[in-house]
Each structure stands twice: as C-alpha cells, then as structure tokens.
Length: 373
Image (tube, rainbow, N blue to C red; front, top):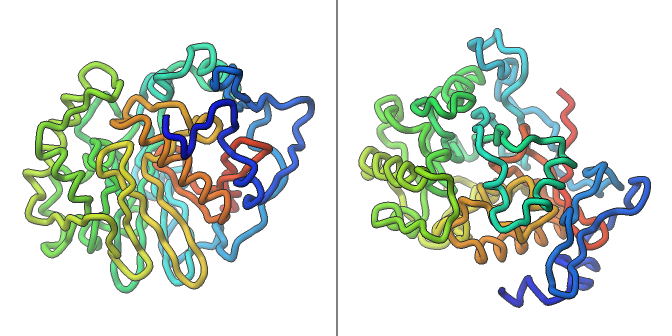
C-alpha cells in the first residue's frame, strides 16, 4: 500500500487534511457508522456508509452556480421509448463555469452486477452499502457524458457506449439526446476521451462520416498505445467476456479514427480554460478534464470515482486496471475537491451527476447539486 494515502490504523482523511476542508456537522439521528479501521488497518462493515447518507451541513458556496442554464436548449428529456420533444424526463443538465458553457448528457444506464463495484470488499460490506442505498445486487450504472463550449469550440467529453450492444439496451442514447438539445454530431469540433473503455468510445463507432473532417480526438498517448498493443487487463477483475470485448471495441475505434487522434503526454488545453490531464490508475492513460474560467472551476472526473468510492475509496472497481494506483489517484482527487469546493461530474453517478465532495468527520461523502429545473 502506498504510504501517501494508507497509514495503518488512520482514517482516509487525516487530521491535517481536515484542517483544510470545509467542515460539516452531521444532522443524522443516532451514531454514524464511519467505518474506522480495526487494528489490522481495514474498514469495518459498512465502510463509512450511514443511513441518511447525503444529509448534513451545507457546504459554503463557490462563485459557480451549478443551476444556471446556458443558451443550450434543454427543453427535451430522457424517456427512452419516445423521440425528442415527447420525452418526459430531462436528459441534459446545463452548467456555467465563468465564460464556459457546459452540459451533462445522460447516455442512459448499463445493467452490471453490483459486485463489480467493489471486488476487494467483503460481501457483507458491499451488501450493507447496497442496502443503505436501496440498491439491488444488479442495477443500471449511470452513464454520463459532457459537452463544453469555449472559445468557439464545441467539445464532447467521452461518447457513451453507442447503440451496437443489445446487452446494454438502456444506454446508447447520446446521439439522439444531443440532437434533442440542438447539438448535432456535425457541430462538434473536438472530442476528449478520459479513457478508451467501450462505454466511453462506443458512441463514435460507425458515425465518422457525420463528423466534421477537421474534428480532432484528444486522448493520452499512453492510453492510445496501450489499446493499440496487447492491452494486458490481467490486473482487473471484470465479468467474463468483458476484457475481449473491450479490446475488440478499442481496436475498431483506433482503426476508424487513427487519423483524427491528437495524442498528448501529460496535459493539453483543448479550448480556452478546458484542460485534459492524465491521472492513470483506472487505465494507464486515464485522464480528467478541468474547466476554469473567471474564478470558477469544475472537473469531469471520468472513472476516477464510482458511487461507493466516496464512502469507501479503498474499494477496487472491477474495471480498474491498476487498482492500488487508482486508489491513490482517487484519494488525491477527493482531497483536492473537498478542499476547494469545486463541483465534480463523474461518469457513473446518477444523472445529473453534478455535485461536490464533502467531509463528515473522517470520511468523504457525495453531495449532489440541487436541480431546480
């Protein structure tokens, strides 16, 4: 274990960290199960989960309003059986970051066994977390993408899974929902990939003819080279058949888009105030996208954190290629987000997926943004 984030018998959030974080007094009735480590340095059952999770004091607001709508059309919504204006639930959530317009779009959900969320957790611990969240043993993982407008450029952040995979019939909604928001594929100037798992690139398969000829796809050099090679996934713990599917989709993607790739080493500014930065961990070239303008900030976190990762950051997702490194990256990002109060948009948190990271005593927690639509 890396001593930077794992010290025997100490909480994930250290006393020094707490001094920097905005503090919250829990309003939950009764004692909280904060999941302190026992003498072996492991978390007890529940792993920081508490009934009433998400309650507590309010975080001091930053300058950014996560409810302010932009000039993107959000009059349509996300009923999967009806096209465009007939949809009954919104599928786009607009944000403003200084002079940057951002939109979170739901690509739908993917039905995956919950056990994949925490392959190193004891079944009782994961079961307690699921019970506390009122979730079954298999449920639809949310899948969200982003669209950003800055400096005359329209940037798609990840592309969802696409419509070619019937086993994920609840997802693959991106193209239709972009069009419902007035954003055709031909309007995109850039695509940023946090990584090249199929649920982040599949939405671009077979649509290259609909894209601008000068569109560029920004991805870490390490990530592109990993999937162009043997793509050793032996350290991940995925459901059977998934590793082969990931490799096949990545190969198809690289064949279709190799001439449009714009690889970067550590970080790259795609548009004014839109910076993609490699973190590694979940995949060798996994990256996050940071927006900054006029003193406001927001992070698209990709797969750096999944829903249990706030309560239990040491849990390994089955898709993590480098599990220990992913934990190090996750804890570092959560500490940063808690200290700064900047909003976060993770890929696999329930739509609209915008929120902030808070600290209650010695554990992180997810505070979803209030949605005033």
